[in-house]
Length: 502
Image (cartoon, rainbow, N blue to C red; front, side):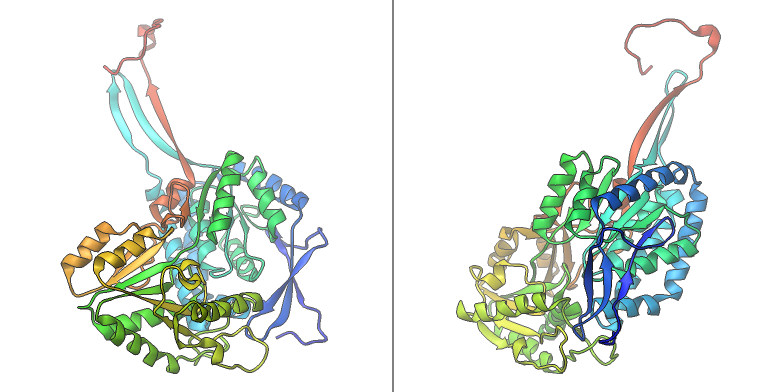
């Protein structure tokens, strides 16, 4: 907590293996969401500062790509061990700047470490193919090579996990990485940078440049940035993809979501209610894989709404620094007020406010909002159409599986979905029918493990590859095919014909 007489701490860039103060003269306030107090001032880079960082990265890329795979893997193993040993320290940073409770922060870090685990196998992941004797005296083989300098632009809601989705594979593949984290909670990225340095990563291979739109535009337009990874809202993802590809870059941009959970009449109501509460209100609903809509089929609706509502009074909402709390504040006062506005608009538009999070009061000036449950929501309401990104769960009553499926498939987003049922045939049909990238069967938040890949469909993803896992390796490398021949010089002759595979 920052004393009112104490100047907020500066949060600098990470350039050339050390903290480096910004030179733009601009900064942004970093709040403690639990108290509403300013605890830091993060530097905001100018275009010139981005250009300087990229120029240094280009020089470093020439040497890093030649580092043997065994050495890169060794660094990843050391980095993984340091992350594991410092989980609590990193979690405290997340709680301080994002507001999530300590247990949730530890969960985020654990999922991030899984991606480092995957990257530790880079010698195996970069094995190419080889065809001996493709033609007389000719062998053909493929190799995967790094792109060079790549950048990541990451969101406020997972300031450790999402960067690790990108960093681990990108570095292991031999790229130099420039991270532009959210200016709302930037300190986790600097903690990660320090651990990478301790693990033996050469100075300049990983850079953190803080900033706002000016820095983002500079990265997207810079000719020496080969690829950009992004996670955020759909409007920004669409813009990032368009601008990045216009400037010749490879881009993967993950956007927003409106994740539905379809509950069939045969489902275990208590199990479904537990899952809905966990998936809707965990991390204050500020995650792209949160369940924000429950589609209750037929007669299951009344019992399910009652079961969800009965669980809400016992949820403990408060500062993430208190281990007894299960949900912390939202990221900012403005976002808190925006989320609260959906509760009022839903009531005005005809929904039933079963539990009103605005009625819960909190001490101090933190950005808290209690959990809300809305029933009788219809697809024409703002609370259904928009990505709320907060602790608000909508229940839409549908007459049948087919009606629920239609709502899922008609939605502009296709990030995640889930079905709760005891019927294996219905579940199997659902995974075939739904037009969504990640599907859970009696699993409310189907985030893939690190050796698969994360990504949605439709307006939830812009680009051809998903994030991390095998797609991550594919995104951060390009394939080169080599055709080689070592003939007897005595048999050499001029041949203007097309090469023959015989």
